[in-house]
Image (cartoon, rainbow, N blue to C red; front, side, top):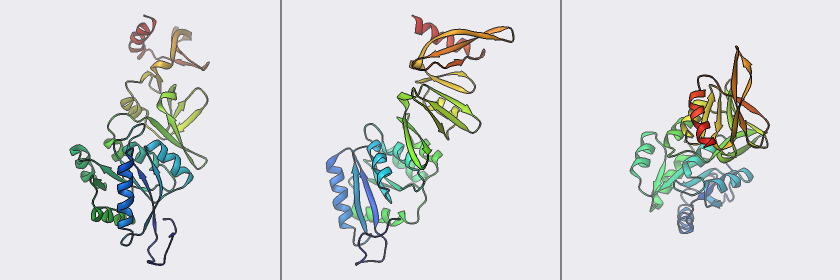
Length: 265
């Protein structure tokens, strides 16, 4: 937890709070409510953001204790935000804020995840903040189950920093032992992800070339036959923007061939 900004009223450490909501009036209401409950639960709003992407950038510069995050937001929603910040070395607690959504509320209650329903009440906000000091972040697999739709970014740790990789920038994903390598036009990133789960989540964007590799459909420039393997020529995928060629397994070629026909038509 951060050190108190002012301890004259209480020895309880002051919680540093970030408000994340794409609607300015909603952020203002939460800011007023946090001020109202500050005597009961010392807190200070240190940052605000209009979506999850901007929130992660702000947290990287100025870590906070608590994030109050709306669920439905453009560019990056609250659940994806929570999935990324859970990978930080000192992850903040995330309290979801939502208009009444039967699916979300049932999922939160089932997994003991704290949430606030709009319009937020001061007593409910105070109770949620008090629980933060003793709560533990939900497991990554629970947040993954709460995600509605595919993520917009993947994330990884590098030299103590959380890096975000836009899905639209990834040319291919390749499994290597316990990790997955994500390749963009400029570099590689090492992800703590499952290739199988990535294939399920991003089936519209990626196609499997062999058991260890997925390639972005729009990154494929064409196909060519490579050097013979066991007496047969193996097909390879040519990629846009990089010279690397990815082999296509015999098992996957019939499926990939159908896509190749669409590519050439």
